[in-house]
Length: 517
Image 1 (cartoon, rainbow, N blue to C red):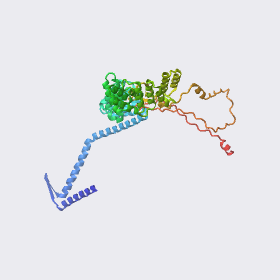
Image 2 (cartoon, helix red, strand yellow):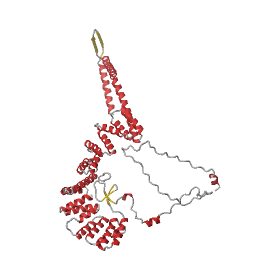
Image 3 (cartoon, rainbow, N blue to C red):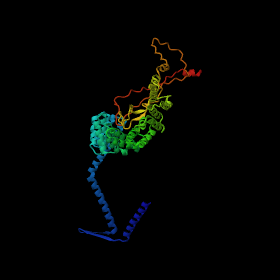
């Protein structure tokens, strides 16, 4: 509406100006080189406007002629860029689809049409990775790392190639260079953290974790920092006990349920005489994660206590939280030291129906120490051989007697968990002795007869049984999964062709037999 109003106002002003000039006629006389031109004011104004428009048109044509070479060059360059980007697009799609031939062809076109383009370099590197040309891929990644706009992706590619050829030192250098360029880069920070942890450089690992603080969640950062602080405290435990205590206390503040940190802090505080603070830390960790190390430190808080005092302290700890079998074992251990065998038996009594290995071993020790009954002790030891496993520090299939901050298999930080080894595979089944195993085995299947021993085929078709057939369990098929930077298997090796299903055979007498039924 506003534009319409402005248009109407402009038209009115123009009309008013023309009318004003028409109401006030005048003459214009021009004398030049012996010529005299006389005309009215309206005609002179119209002639001036026409001359101005003609000059503008003439200048536009002249400027177009003068700039035509640049325009033609710009058009050709623009068309070349469009072709290059189309080749890059086809190549990246081919890389994602695993089409090596199309990716290589598109990479060649992109390199010819758009040399130096970041996406063209990336396409060349990825197509070289897919075709197995590692040296070419590394050369392209080095060229990308030398540029400011593609430095990070070039370092990422060089890091991947170094890991593939198992060159840990080169991979560490590339990751550290990437961290210097972009401290918040996630993959580089994780790689530097893993390398620092593998070298037991806990101070460097803490510095690397601090650089990743913005990329991690608050809980993850606190947990990982607590683990690194605990690892550093354990490393200096013998050389600098004051520093070890300070590091353990800081770890407990970040993760109160971390068992190694709480146990170490409890020991160091007990040595310093701060028993109440040590007991509070141990009780808090015990409520979250009951663990034998916590019970042992809690029972021995005060130096010089009698075995009965340690038993009372173990009983008091077992009453806090849902301790379960861990609390019962802690009480039984303290009761054995105090020679209170009745208390030890009462603590383990709820778990004797299905004892774990530690419960059975403790019962064997009770029988041995209290009565000297070798027979019952051996019986409990035999039950321990077939009993369910107790929790242990487990990470990536490795069972350790003590906690470690890093997995020895994958190098993952905070990988060890207090759980039953291999519990994720399935439920724990009861042990089966040899006699039960033989009795439960099905009868052997008859061996197939030879051609001469086979009986003649029956003339009449056998009736189908109404009982459903038992289905054999089908083994699960594990799909083949590729990593994002892995070109996958060689495309030259193709899978076996799938046979086409054959059509069912049609019986021509079927309809006639059905008619007489």
